[in-house]
Length: 453
Image 1 (tube, one colour):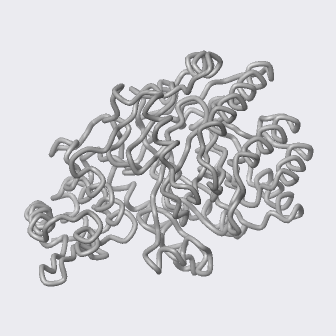
Image 2 (tube, rainbow, N blue to C red):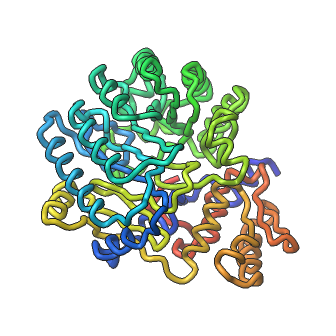
Image 3 (tube, rainbow, N blue to C red):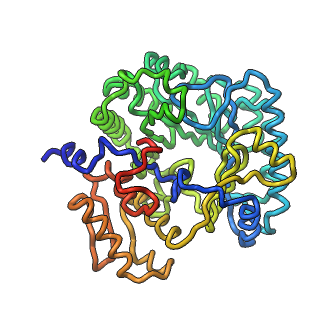
């Protein structure tokens, strides 16, 4: 039986499986979680803890067709300025609720297009976030940068504000593919922004590239990856394009007939993966790559890797607070999500309260299963003894969960009952998300059709 035949047997090319940037996934959040829960969880943060902040800027000058993120187009700065004013009000509410002694581990701005903020807005927002609490010695301030929506003044403002890591979305450098996905971004433009960043002392660079795009072939993705490697990014996320036009109507502009088959998608991934490995990037989880000395690579080697809504991270903070419309916060007690629409979000904040409208309060064995799935996604293995120690569950319970997954996936997983460990061997790693779903009590056995692969 060929590797592809084996993978097909377990439904790799048919299933729609969550990306597991959270457990449970956001599709299982409910409206039972309200602002009072969010406030209580903030107030319960132990003094001296490290926390991370995420600010969502949902605006774009143009809407890329491939994108399924929560965004909205604007040609005017007026709604952006009003939105930043609301973010500042939300930060003030957070400051009033935060316990003393909290420190900031990470600050990240995502979108949307954070770099459409005018220089004065960059300064105001950054100052307000840094004023919330002192930073740790290894704190990072990262911003998602659109090379088509940035200039010298905004780069200067970001550098002056303390940005020390930039994240650039590449998608693909092929002009025909760029036209098909509504994201024209010449390599020369991207290269110039990278040089400008480094001229300002910002040495750390993340990049995103997609596989599974229309008209993409192994030859084309090879050319794009080689161009990307010439920029020498510290980290690369190799994401699979999720074609979900029923969720993101703009994707209807992308020709279905030009999309690669599921089998071809795997070939595209493997082509890019080999190129990154040949260039001496360490493989991180299912879809990230990093220079051998990068913090992400070190965390992966030492099994300190974590997974959150931005993907893989070496951030050890157990609290991530999301600011802005649709932003999701993570606490040891559960998840809380702000209102998705900017109007609803702004109305709630301006009324003097937080904008939480949904989320999930951990119950039963949620926290344990969340950790199991994170281990699988990060390490391709589960340390059952850690689960027994941390969550005070009997070994028999862990063994039963392992065996149930083994019955489903047979020889594609390895179970060591004596060591109380569960492992996914390298040949089976394309099935990682499907195997993680075996430990998900909220997902139906056939998988959820609301989240694409």
